[in-house]
Image (cartoon, rainbow, N blue to C red; front, side, top):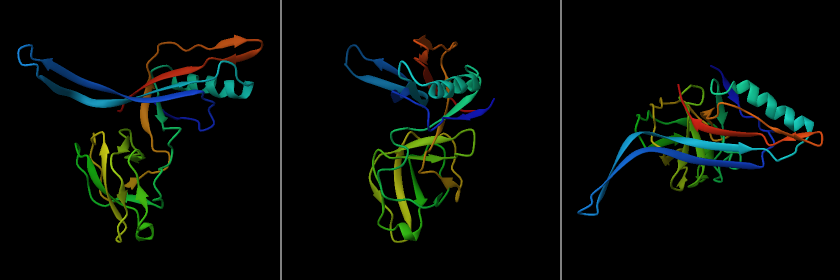
Length: 207
């Protein structure tokens, strides 16, 4: 299995992100109460679609991507095309200030003293374990500010699936997660000498 990068210049007319949760809910008919059991880590979903008719060059990029994925064989490293960098102002080189355990929803990131006063905002993304096969895109849940020591405490969802090692790199630019196609077949349309109608339906899967 290989990891394919999502081309930045892929022509996309529709792009959606979501979460697929593995929860089981029980309802009490007498009391009206419900209880929910979490059966597994939630997985991110993504769908991509091209315009109906596109240029030969754009169609070639789509065909190349679909062939490279090999159906459900290879992984696609997906980023949020509309939010590829934070709305917050913190930049520079980020690392994990301390180790974070699997199951954690908070961690401290070292952004550097030169970033003091800069921000990371609720709704921003960052990525951990980006060089590995269990990478995660994490969604910032509350605004935070880099302190005078260059540190910021970040709360996020979803929980860490695997530990983050102290001093490991944290990605704020184009963080990714790994996804696979959910379809057994790929097709596209041809009209008036043009091709289009390309699409991908993806679900997060890790090694």
